[in-house]
Image (cartoon, rainbow, N blue to C red; front, side):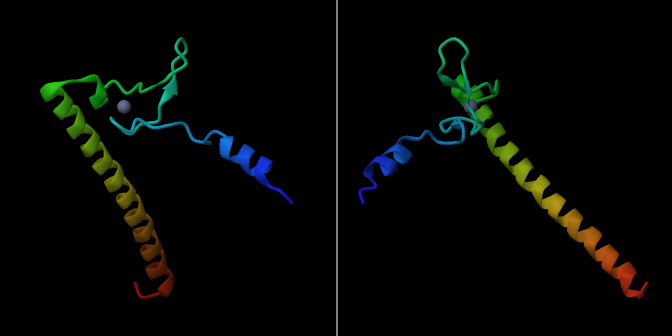
Length: 94
Ligand SMILES: [Zn+2]
């Protein structure tokens, strides 16, 4: 049996996720309502600046990634702390 047509159709399917701003901030792009092109709506995106402003925008992207990483780490540690406090109170050792 030849699966070429089915495989070919599958290959032509568009990706499920919207593209991201790969050369700039990494945010998800949106369709422009007039040109129908993918655009970045982040007003602080490095692609919208030159010179020192671009460097500042790139630093902002980097620091925001660090903030997200630290927030996720804090959430994990908070959940772990809740679990440990609960285990301690259930152990009868207090
Ligand atoms: Zn961007």
